Length: 186
Image (cartoon, rainbow, N blue to C red; front, side):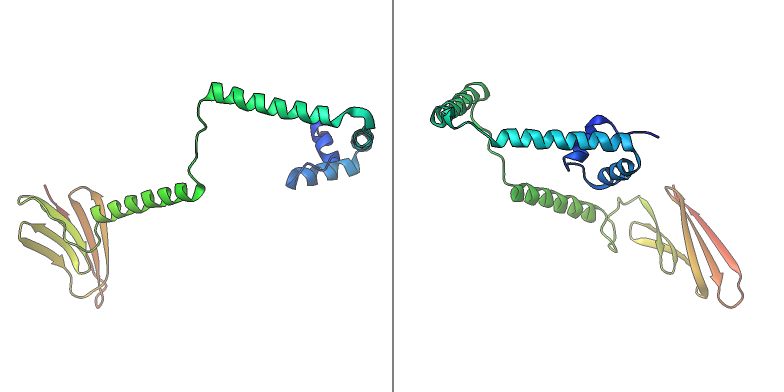
């Protein structure tokens, strides 16, 4: 049987474990007498310490302690000013969130603009463009276009295997015949 460490048992005794750790430790402590004694020891030590802390002597000199603590706070603040320079002002969380969202909108807008759906992309006069259309494969260059289509196709599947290569497979709705067109462009 693997026992939880001393730190984990102390945290469990003080109620400072959460979630799965608390549940697994409680399960182990219920089954293991040695760990249960350890947890009881931690709990009794905490009770003794808490009682000792609540009984503060009356002649402690609270005014002197309060003045000393205030002076230490001022000394620490002044030392921080000398060493660290002016305090850094952080932008509120909402401004950082707004900046992140603006960046995301700009990024998505740029991606959409570069890949405009449905629009015709401008090409160089001598560039050949291969496209899959609802009716087949289309090859465009300048102002001309060549489309390979099958009018009685029940279904069409288009494959892109490399830049400048398209393959379309048509199934005839009446005969079930399969027609495969391969188009290569340089």
